[in-house]
Image (cartoon, rainbow over all chains, first blue to last red; front, side, top):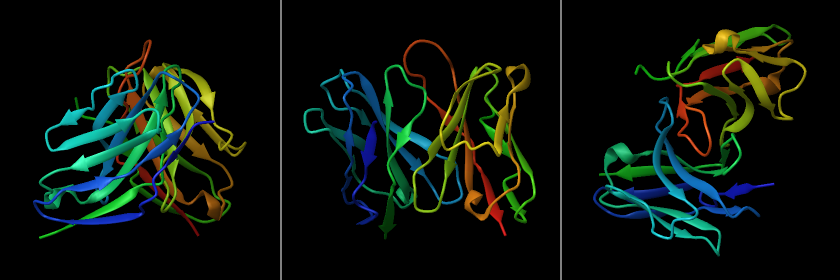
Length: 114
Length: 115
């Protein structure tokens, strides 16, 4: 069975600084997708960034980028120029090629201070 | 595109009562998913519909849980004889269907408290 592990329950960063959230996963599949979702307090979960396992190039979305290390089964999220609005719970998630369900990690609570 | 909506947003019930939640997906999405999120945990998959057919159920979905999606539009999740362990956020998501991956869009969730 696939598993997703987020080893940092909480992280903090100052505005304008950079922070990296860690995620590791375990799978025997070769084709899959990895995601970072953001869940602000009392608001719905939204997709931040997606990485297809077959792509060697790391995904980037504005201030958000990932470091995808397939052999190491590592998928970290870097947030550059952090903003107060980035404060949220961040979930790493996995989806295999044929499956339907997302498999989530336990999440990392990110706080941003001014 | 008005997004995924869920009703109610909050529900407090006494142990042993039945509760029903509703999810309205994005209109052109034919796939609908239910997840459960307990405090300090990530969402866990419960069940999945392709149109009106329930194609997959997690072992987390005990006999007290039932989900329907009549006519392939909105879905309901019913919990019978609620227990305190059922207290959680129940999330609904929808996506397009087909081969490969399609982004799942999440609703705001229904927070259930069983007293």
